[in-house]
Image (cartoon, rainbow, N blue to C red; front, side, top):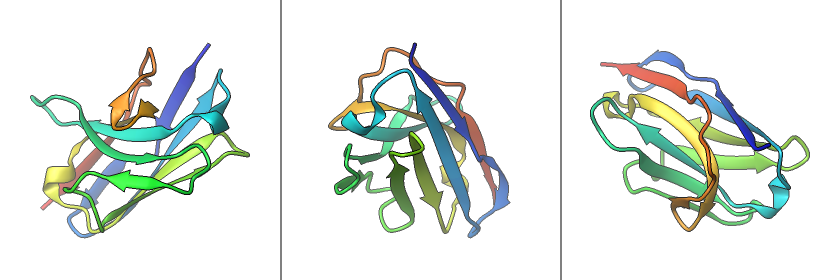
Length: 119
């Protein structure tokens, strides 16, 4: 059974940093590209970043490029999102999932982790 557990969110001020984690189980983690997505109140879920199965290729949404860094540890079945220079518009619930391109392909979502950035 696929399970994705996001953690690391919190309340921070603009300009501060957070590191999110997503622990995965129930599938062969290293063979899947992984992505982070976010959903702000009243908005659709949107793509944030992706990383290849080996970790040697990454891609970011323009809105976070240069501020966020995605990484993974295949020995720990975990994908990370380092978020720097946070802005109020980064406020959202953040989720991870398996991806093809920038499209989530996992059949289910975790509970997400709330990130709130105050101005």
